[in-house]
Length: 540
Image 1 (cartoon, rainbow, N blue to C red):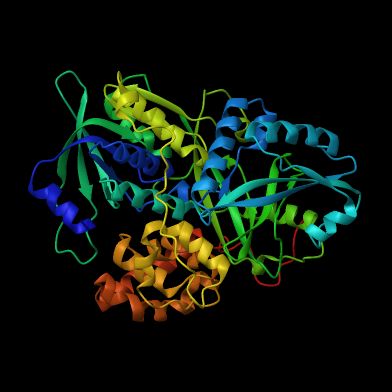
Image 2: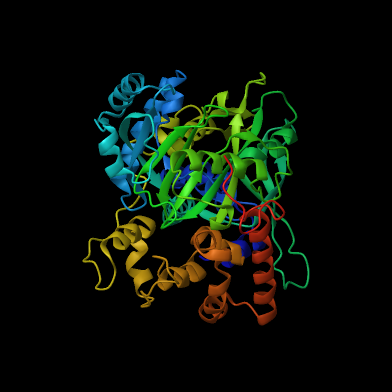
């Protein structure tokens, strides 16, 4: 069933689900995948778009977290490393290995000996060996342009990288194939409770289409278990239960810059401790460009508004770029785009600096409402299973599918079509799995502008992936809005020509969506308006 058919079914007759998952980010998508794969009748609802929040705005890393290991979080690191290895095996092209370099400069922490000891433990927990050490001369071959002044040596190791929004989309698709109903732009408004206060269902409010003549009525669905996977929005549901057994969240913002690859041509991730706060900051290749990030700051703004980078964060990231690659000459007007995500960090309430907060996830049960938050992109699967185990209670092990069951259904084995580069073919297999043959039947395997995105992917998203707004297509189903200048504004007429009819939008609706998207991009995905002008020089 498509989205409209599912909504009509929910509105016309009563439905009871085994599990209702609220939140369509990586955690909620992981819960839906495990629940539906276990044969549980599952409904997932997301108030905005799938991966709209943190799960499309992360640092894209699938890793164990060396800094968490250095802080003594052995369990978190071990579990993340095991999941990293599993994801790379199951979803090549979606989760890919990425070499990392940590240069060691005279007088700077950490030194090469200390870092190699840490890497030895990191590899042992992962069950592989990827570490090595490069001389200053060898480092120049790996990372041309890297600052070589006072460079003693460079540590090398391997982690992994992904497209976080596509990872969520792939999980949503796997959950749907297993029988889950997954709906974006459907808000969970009010929890339904019985006379004992136990949660028995939820009142849902689908978003009204811009051209609708009136509000769509809300609807109530019933369930045995509700899992609150709404991240930084978890309190909205927790407060409806009115007890003290809840998660305390601390929203922390991480912001990033997208740099054209020709301005910063890295082929591996390069990290350095920032001089102002001693946090690791990375430059790494992604989606045909180079990402520079991330920050770690309190986020006090309205959580329902798109988070955006601040001028102080731009300064912070450009400063480390200048230290790492002093000859690159990166200036503010070189920046393609920005993004900021808000991490749902579970806190104990002590006054720690943001970077010292524990990044482990937490889960709790309160009158039938299971809330889960925190954790890492990498560990979505064990987090999902823990939430379901708590929800199902006694006998959960017999109700859940085996822990070794694959997350991703293998795609068909077929030869690479002529005209599609090998690296693009690998990516397509990872992004779309079993749907790839149907996607390629769209026939148009030409690329969009100067990217590796195929027009067939655009057409597929419009037909099959619940595109309700233009920003869904430009920022999450694809990353055209991040990798093309000015959010891809010059490409929008071509997208309109091919996609407007598929989306069923009138001319007025398209104009409205385009204006909405471009305003959103200016506000949340570009440099702060008044901070920089072309010609400003790199600071720091």
